[in-house]
Length: 439
Image 1 (cartoon, helix red, strand yellow):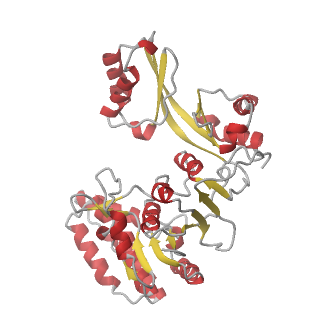
Image 2: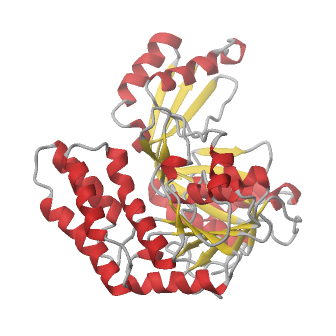
Image 3: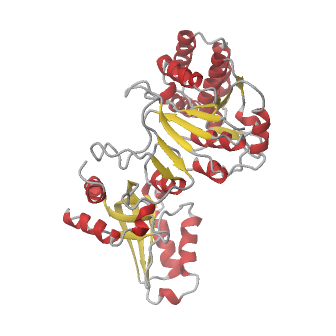
């Protein structure tokens, strides 16, 4: 639909009545913002709890035979206070009663988790005088959360016509007709699905920050703002911990070449980041951003003549697959292969995997290295920068930081280094100073 914007508002944008009023002003400031996607209310302050967390706690309490009344009372109070302060023309008490009843009857975890978005969507639609769209009627998901192709025409059909539409984020319906949620932050994906369904001009994602910065402001003091980056650069940065946008939210809009804008609800006219299919390479801007995560585990496997053993790498990865562990990186040599996984993904399966590798592959040695941090330095200009890898390694060496992993992807727009957790913050600052300058 030409001239149409999809606007998604996150939990911090909807935490209290004052934030809701900001959201309404943003929506009404531009008539192109006709499709609104909402998250559940987030924290009002550092001591507060997110609505989704409270709902999940209710589910856990019921499943363990514990009275959830004190927790659900907090949920009830949050929504009824919002309804009263905003004068929402909706019987929120009846909706809350129904939700409480279903949770007490052992509703599924996904159903329970989705009710924050559901009730927020109902309230927002009533408050704006908009049409409410139920995600379970339009967003169809496979068991692995892949989006079924039927989603897009069905959602487009429901979004036809004049006026505004409100869609709760975070959930849809699976192949068995049950409510299914995306991973946390999944309302970003709902917004992307809606934008693709209606062929929107722009997908606006409203949050509590003004887009992306070249490094985490909690680590690098006053990092530079990123005005524009590509889907590919965003994917690398989001996956490695730049958590402004869910890392899977780009896929629906990328295929349709719809730009994403990350905007700040608390500063609607301020700086923002625009994410586009492609952009001209700027030789003066070698690095787009630096991001990373702590707590990885490295499995280092050594075996003479590994390179001549057909299928060796496949069998290694099949062992991780058999234990339900996905891998993040796999640097290799002639006689060695490494597999890098997140510690929280690995859980308590480390010893089992090591024993299986020894039994199936009979390696010369298997070493497990824990407490690793992975840092990604991302930028499409890197391919044109002679000596980039040397500069990065030298910057770390000056700080006395030892490299455990170096991986420069085939596309040459992302260089991965692995270091000890304890050097994580120092390493990010060293890379930033080398390629951007002093903060």
